[in-house]
Length: 151
Image (cartoon, rainbow, N blue to C red; front, side, top):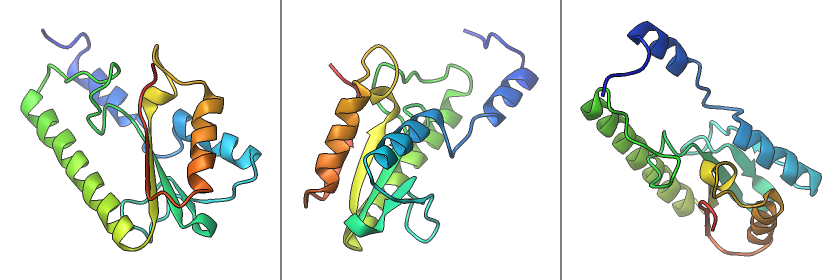
């Protein structure tokens, strides 16, 4: 099936997608801040440039978009246009992210991944539950946390 918009329009649409300060990321930031957690944003000095860095808890949080990280949830669909390009690009994103997570753990950081589908769509969790899970993890000594889509 062909794309529903012309290549120039699709290019303009794709270039408008942000990598920082996305709506899911802002939701998590606002909720954690309201609960008293303080953090640094987009830490360039750490592997993978985590979205949130909480040095006091020696923890980082990534808020991942399901498309760009190839999450196998209900929000992710492989593009029909240029499928080889997208499989390679998304596959590489996954490899880079896994390597960054492993390096962070090796450096003594705890790593959380919150997926976009946990915060939006038909299978999202209530925001209070997502933040409760994050808070419990931050106050624990557990090394990894992943919050995927809900029930």
